[in-house]
Length: 289
Ligand code: ADP
Ligand code: MG
Image (cartoon, rainbow, N blue to C red; front, side, top):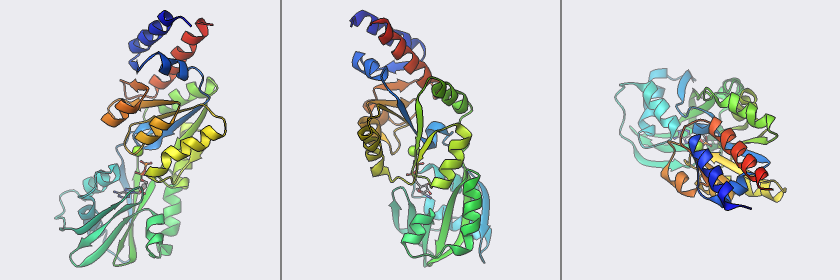
């Protein structure tokens, strides 16, 4: 191996807005067979919006106001969507606020107990979601994320939240597929929503319903099957998975942790950078043989 051509490869990648940490990273990037993508903020825009609100014997505006009151304490992208939708409603003060990572949020306001999150969370807490189940399925199968609100132990509302794919994700994934990589989506979102988005994106395999702490383990499982894995993410929830993969690829504009952990950082916030980076890595290493 001639170090000169590796340096040239790293330099060529930089021209494409791809920062490669070192020669070793480029080498590892040339032998991958499986690419794992975080969903939110990586495949998608990461700017979710509430597209529908359904309630059961409860006023919509009141459901939104209570949900938004809870989300004041959360930094999750879904929280932003609910707060935006609530607009300038007078929010309630929340006590005993808790974040249940990868599931939702809970707290108390105006003498009511509030729980907001996915169906797994509500069911875990013994809330019967039957009255909203059909609507949950319908929204999820169209690629929206259903977020449920329970007030005093009763499911009262469903917020369907949509986070569209990035404009060039489909094209970039088609290019990577063409190059022979197996494409995997890794997400904390529910399997129905995840599969709908995966179909639209052209993803081969979905690993859904994974709690934040389980993402690195999901990478380990793929590796134990003999796969050479890159993880692509923005570092929100996925820094340990970036570190576990043979090659961690951080989307530009993501968290600083991601950039510190990653072997490769994309300056442009586009998956085209992944296709460019891997093509350059392969071409560089091929020329050295
Ligand atoms: P991702 O893999 O997309 O980053 P997360 O692990 O952050 O997903 O969250 C998984 C799921 O947990 C979300 O799809 C949502 O249903 C629920 N959830 C997490 N945080 C919140 C929140 N602040 N408000 C409502 N729902 C939430
Ligand atoms: Mg994420």
